[in-house]
Image (cartoon, rainbow, N blue to C red; front, side):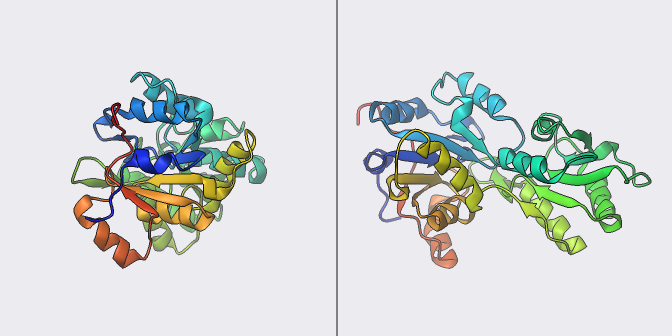
Length: 286
């Protein structure tokens, strides 16, 4: 590949940076080795930073604990903006009573429970008793029986109209250097196609997540959009979302987009990042 530039050279041109999490700061093995150097660079140069993640499986507090457990103190809960937070805001304003059923783990239900609404795992819902179910949320790709519970969802939505919220729009995520797995957004797309209804989606590339993050930046200092850098590993969520919101973007090659495929994916999709970097990790001696 041509035109790959060092991340350290790029990021110092900006006053704030938005990072995707999985595939950028961490991968299937955990946090990228040397990522602490990147946060040190940002802090030393007074570059503000936030993590914009479509991971709705855990709360910002739980997500921050994962960084802290690995010695990264720079990522605190207030630095994490998740699609689950946006889904929670929607539920607070649109669903006033009844039960919200969810697809995911008990941890992922945190976002619903924090609204004060009653929650129920899809596993515990009976097709013979749907009167109290007012909304459904796709949160995580774990915590349920894929065949039985997805079939149950399809039949619930055939029987009853309700708001359906997809709190993670990712269709896949990397599980190794060369392999990916279907994510909850991919499951939601399949169910949506089967029943012929339109779901409400939160997360990248939706502008609402970028606006939420931009408001956090503006609360601290007056920064223009062209002074903010969005860093991601996926063209159709991170990069197009940043592009549409008016941010410069970096595609990194540590996640969904493999180095050998990057040129082809950019050419075929028409989604063009401002920069391409191998990784966000910077060497301490650079």
